[in-house]
Image (cartoon, rainbow, N blue to C red; front, top):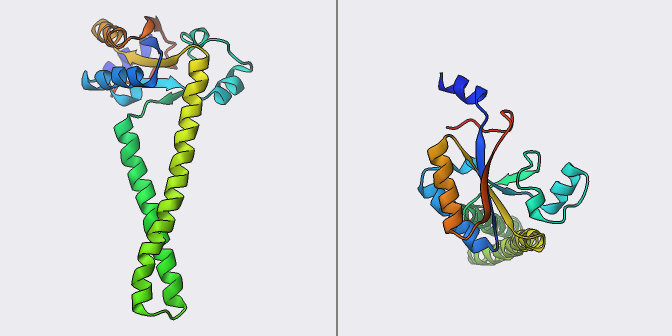
Length: 194
């Protein structure tokens, strides 16, 4: 019965504009601590995706606050990003070490050389991981700078009822969110709560 009620009631969401990544991150962290599922928290997608979807550039992020069709991306905490990065980049170092070790072993190198190659391979894998890490960090920073140049960073959170709406508005405002308000979403846009 709860599924049927969710599908027939328009969902609501709270939105706020943040002047820097640190306050946005703190607000999102508090939302998660309050029990909001990560899939109900979203951020504005990159400028290219927004322009492609809307068919035009936007001047200020405030133009996009209440548009349910604007492309968004899921919020990922710094902790989740760091854990995923460690997993992926650690794997690259291992692949580099194994590939280098395999090449030396296949060429008939001595066991000592093969064991030493693990260090060389790990360094090569670490170098590749470092380059990818820098690329991802630069891409993320560029996206944030672009949004800040348009007036700030948008954060949306879907709410299920009036109590959640009030809690979300209080959290965003407490973390220096500007223009914090709620609006209705079309039913097709709303995510079904877990």
